[in-house]
Image (cartoon, rainbow, N blue to C red):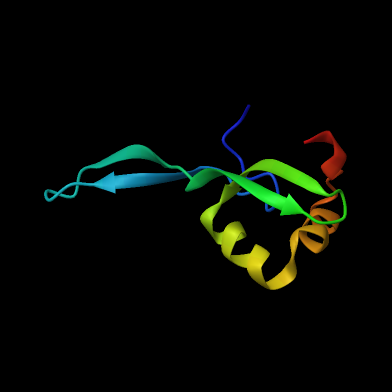
Length: 78
């Protein structure tokens, strides 16, 4: 499984690590992903998703059904 948020699609970003002498080396800025069990009231069961912390915060506002619909995800698969 790739390191990608299942609801928002966030993934790693290429960047430079800049030293004190201003030498630049490439590094990878990974998304802060967490495994999260969320109660899905429509399906009447728990759903386990790999989410970014930003998506976990947004779930509190929008709800799981709305975010899954935006992402085009069928929650029955999880």
